Length: 208
Image (cartoon, rainbow, N blue to C red; front, top):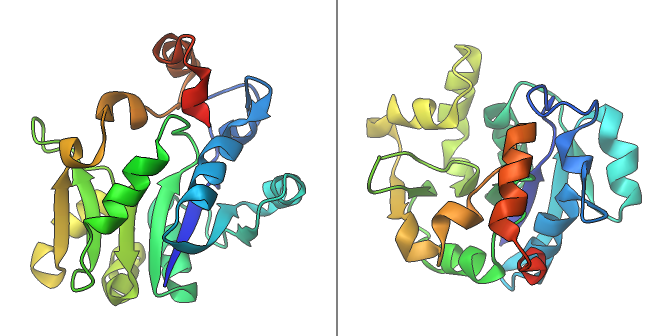
């Protein structure tokens, strides 16, 4: 069984505006609702949750989302570790990619075999990995715990530095996404927000 978890526990220090970026309104709706609604539409998930800080938990829950409190607030790796302690297989996605398409999520799941520890998109041109749009299995728990304890909080670096200890399938982004540069565009700064509206243009249906 595969569970979806939307990461929304970050401090959003680069985004500004004084709130968690996941709650920032995009065309009148909090940003997190766009990606959360898409994982709910994905036919492979048995359930979906938002992993949030205690400070944001009540507000996120009031939006109709199922909430898991981030016990660590130390970045994505500890959040993934926490999710894998609760569920055996987890699809992890960041809250700040509202242009991801449901078909891309389903394609990703379909391409991830059961006998690997993780499936992560990778840009063939640069080698850059997308660990916040990925599937993780709880066979990685020991490795993630080791990285956490030595303060290696980057998922990509943790897996790269332990490549002999984990069976990771890296999938070319062009095999997953129709338009990877648009779907994987994430909003971290006010400048990103301006670029997002340029990418969106009049195609508001891409948010749904």
